[in-house]
Length: 310
Image (cartoon, rainbow, N blue to C red):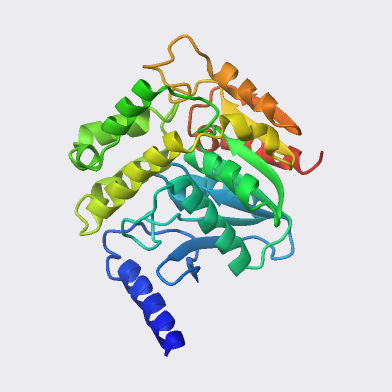
């Protein structure tokens, strides 16, 4: 009976995802589904030779699998490139989750996913919020992890209580739901030095999502993720990361550091906070913004390849 209930729950989770296909993003790669718990199914793509070194990619706040298209395109001939949609994003199970700590929740999800696919010796590649999730994963679930690559990671920069409260207010679900097309476009523009063609496709996905019955749940997940980044600081735990780590920032990142609260701080200064990690290499990419893997895909992919030669 218990087994039937679990199967029923997993089927319900799948239906929660599948029934809203017209509003969810469509991907150019084959999409797979991994049932990692009784109520969460993760969407993922898995490209490249199955016996090649594994790179597991975790997107940032408001992101999804498409953020990794240029990375997958450039690396899939030599690496097994796996990119996931975190819960509440993309084509994964879409509802607000009753979790107090979304960084720990997402890290646990990544761990469950890696175990479900029986992945070993994994290079975990996290962008922005996904970088902070990857740090928490390395600290709490390191067994299958070989190395970290942190692309413009959140969590190095810290905020005092007043700053944190202001950021939480700005990220509130009702505020996100009220954004106009102009605001959405401006938010995307801030991620790039030069908007690539794929950015327009991402903007259209975001505008289409606003019509979806699950959009409020999506907005709540984003709200709670911001709370998680602020309430689960990792800055003081960086020295406890045990695996080799490569930190990459775009020199022209306009989101890190926060340009309102930390005007005197530079992106390079934030990147150098990574020196707290015992086995670390730090690299800056010219003419790249916050979405550096899309701004300068060739240079970013070359940086990834170099990690595997050291």
